[in-house]
Image (cartoon, rainbow, N blue to C red):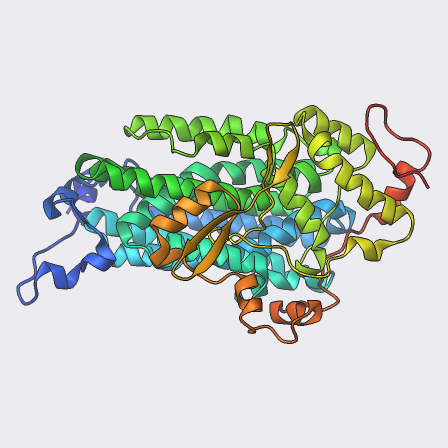
Length: 506
């Protein structure tokens, strides 16, 4: 008997579904998991992905990817490439390994949730491939990061970070739990595959792979590129879901997309923004973080939402202003509170680097330059203790990142403002108006205690910096610190850069 052609059987096997005789549909697809809401149950039968794949094809393709990725890794293990990498780039990889590896496992669970409770057979079929993808990403990321533990104990946080109470890990868990774990599958499809993967991680991984190659880290570039090709396939679950939701409940679609874009942008400002504009060596910086966001993220996001009939989010002006401020402020915070993180944040404020920052961000010197001058004075005077924290930063009750968003006053000065909200007998604090609005509308699901809330509640003992570091799981050998103090003294000794105000003369 002749074999059927692929196109003759694939449409049938990818959309297997049936009616249940002994239980009603609501019991199989409960609303709190499936989240059909205002969408008629029958509308989901039109769900169709644009790129279709069969299981044999999937296995063959993944085998080739795995073989290629691990072959490169095996070859480079015998080289001294890692020893020659810039310390700033190593910090970028540590941040990525710790922040991403086990979040990929959370994405596995989100895909499995869609594979069980998705409202169309074709959707559930695609989600099965997505779950296999994310499980692969978990394995490859943790394995690649594990290789360097013997060389640097901070790489141990590849597998450890997400399971600790470190404030960075809490912030990421807070976002991913809302995006992947507590949401119903309709919201998951918009939040994870559409906004976070299509809108952010796909393109961010492409840029990260390019930066890795420029920095000489072929191993990391190879790993990231291998992961990105999977994301490009299973991220297409978002489009068909959004099309159906826009037809029946566009208000809900707008809200889910808006809040997820904001949460993703806040997280990537801390992770990607600092990596691109500070940790990547100056000679390897292809473009600034703002330029990258404008070219790859913003343009694509606007095209996507307009294609589906969505409007720009209500916070758009606040977001665009934040591209010049957020990641610089978060970088300063990460550097100052460096004992509370698992990588070595490079300050990257030498005269040449400051000139580059001032060129890319005209207000950088006005907003941040004088603060760094004070830090440089203390470092060059040998008073490093003055650059270390005595307590924790105030954290936003929505994104759990430090409240450090500087805005310009009418008199031209720049100030960090707290955005408060009194609710249920207490006052909450937010970094921005958008975080405050998201909290108010979704307070039943995002009202999670920050590290500050836990500290004030007496959950951290003793109530001092030592107790905080112990609570977060940080030990002396993995606490972050700037490895380049000597370069600071060299760069600022007798040669202040023209046009850059500095009081850092020895």
